Amino acid sequence: AQSVSQHNHHVILSEAASLELGCNYSYGGTVNLFWYVQYPGQHLQLLLKYFSGDPLVKGIKGFEAEFIKSKFSFNLRKPSVQWSDTAEYFCAVKGGDKIIFGKGTRLHILP
Amino acid sequence: NAGVTQTPKFQVLKTGQSMTLQCAQDMNHNSMYWYRQDPGMGLRLIYYSASEGTTDKGEVPNGYNVSRLNKREFSLRLESAAPSQTSVYFCASSGRANSPLHFGNGTRLTVT
Image (cartoon, rainbow over all chains, first blue to last red):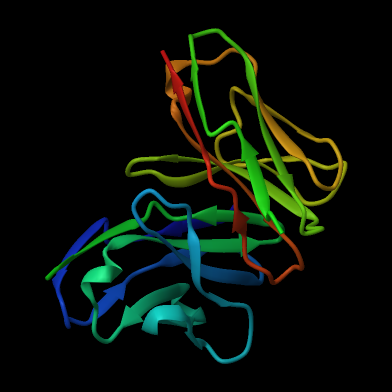
């Protein structure tokens, strides 16, 4: 069975700080990995995805993530956050046709 | 191009009542999914359908049934609603094997 674990439930940062949100997964086969963002009152939007090839993937709004197969990790990073990055972030794993999500990390950026 | 359409947007039920949440996509996607979102719990997969005519249980299927009516439509039924089913429900679809999910706007369900 596949599972996803997000270690940080609530993160508070000041503007211009660097961000790293942790995501670990378990699955016995080939996985596809995603990060989604949910702004207040909206549904989830795709930030970035990994399927194969270069383990460092770049997404929208300056976000990037690195797939480290040996650590079963797919951490999300951003060098300098903005107040508008305040949102909830979800890591997701696709194994076969099944897609499951982590519990999310609520990010709050102080102006 | 509407994408993924869910109805209704809001619903209030009394305990024991039944209802069906409707979902349709116009992107010719093979896979469709139902999730529920609760504070602090993320999105939890209820059921999914990899193709027309197939359905599979997700992480939290108890109390729900689904129907993949055709390639476009995937409905979620609560036969006897319980307060624990108060949640926001999202339908989503996905095309090729390596494509991301496309979400509907959600249904906010309250069971009293």
